[in-house]
Length: 296
Image (cartoon, rainbow, N blue to C red; front, side, top):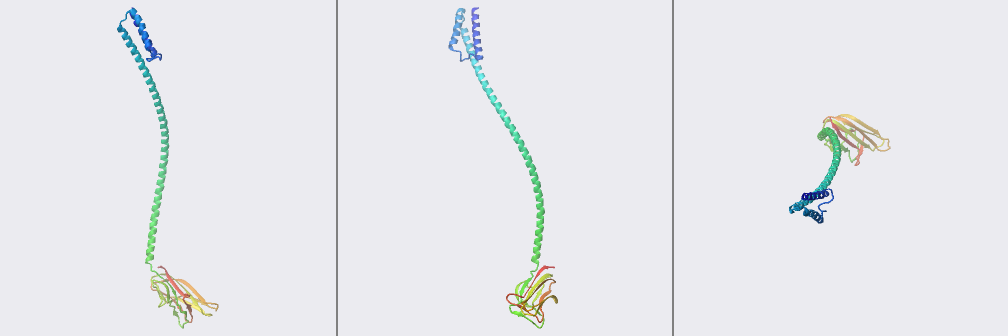
C-alpha cells in the first residue's frame, strides 16, 4: 500500500513539472540537477520506507527525461509555428502588394487600350486621306501626262514648222534714187535670213509654206521739201503705200508694218516709185523685216 502511494506521488510531480513547462513556467532547461536530485532523494526516502525496487526508479527517471524532451520539442514547435506565421504574414503583405500593382497595371493597360483605339481611328483617317491623295495624285499624274504629251506634240510641230525670218539693211552706199521708173528695192545687207527665204539678188521674199506672215520696214530720206514714198507688194498687188512730205526741217522717216496671209510660193517685195529716193548707210536707217507667225 505504501509503495503504491509513493509511485502515485512521483507521477503527480512529473505531471506538474510537464504542466509547468507547457504553460511557460519551467522548461527543460530550467530544471536543474539539484531539483532532480531533490525529487529522487524525496522519492528515495519514501522508497526506503516503502521498499521500492531500483527498476521503478530507472523507469521514473526515463519518464521524466521523456517529459523534458517533449517539452523542449513543443517549445521548438511553437517557435517554428511563430516563424511560419511571420512568413505567412509577410507573404500575405506581398500578395496584397502584388494585387495593388496588378490593379495599377490593369488601369494602365486599360489606358493603353484606349490610346490604341484612338491611334487605330487616327490611322484609319490617315489611310483614308492617303487614299484620297493617291486618287488625286493619279488624276494629276494623268493630266500631267496629257500636258506632257501636248507639249511634246507642240515641240514636234514646232520642230516640223519651217524656220522663216529675215532682217535686212538696204546699203552702205548712201542715197538710192531718184529713178525714172519704179524699181524693186534690193536689200543687200543680210542681218538674218532663216530658211533663205529672201533673195538679196532679186529683192523678193518667197513664202515656203502657207501661213500668216508679219512684215515691217523703216525708211530714211535726207532730201528737203520732197515727198518720201514706198510701196509693199504681195505678188503683183500693192498692199501698202506709205508716204510723208519733208518740209525742210530735218530728215524724212517712214515706218509701217502688216500681217499677210500667203500661200506657198507667194512673193512679197518693196518698190521705190519713180522720182523718189531713200537713204542708208552703215547705221541701217532703211531696213526690211519679216517672219512666219504660224502655218495655216
